[in-house]
Image (cartoon, rainbow over all chains, first blue to last red; front, side, top):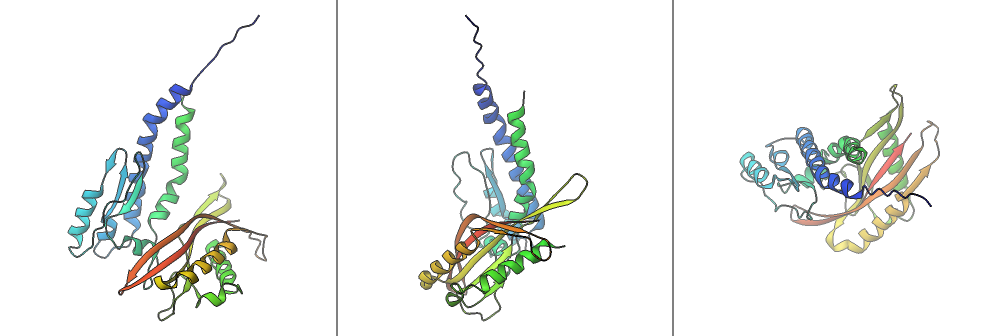
Length: 135
Length: 136
């Protein structure tokens, strides 16, 4: 004869994840976008001001595209990137954002997006881990 | 000691001196090829750098994602594919023992990359990968 006690914390854990993870990823998407904008080289500013974040809680594309066009009326604006439901993206509305970040046959790369993400990576993982540690 | 210079030297030496890769390309360059360099060629560049330090500030290791890609015109796909495959063989998983300067280096590919660039009316393909380098 014995006593069996069963705990099932998974429903509560899942509820915390569904509530907290989107907020954390949204917060850090904005931080990464802001840091990349500060670091990106500027002439007219259309590439930097054209950076936008798309998260389950926000979509900055329209505002960024408008700002980029305001900085440089001749800038080519590309469509918003496809983001899976619940996904996160940080991208550039200006067509030449890729050339600034990754270089071209005529221009050396001047990364700012990848350094911004790398700078925040440890903090993002810590914040997500704390969701699981919550009592 | 600046780790980035060691990584750049390793990448250049490895890519420029490979007997399989050399016949496929017209050179290796950091960042951007010299003006007038015919395609295809290989470029590599640092994307970021992060130090991991101990609590008393001692530098334990440095991690740096580097992009390595072969650049060529769209009509030269077969050569670009062969060159990028060879680059991945050379860099896909590297563990280098400490050299004369005491630094050891590992490379692992984070992800492959492939993009199209249209410049001056010419369509270029850039194929390669982002490689995470850990050096300590």
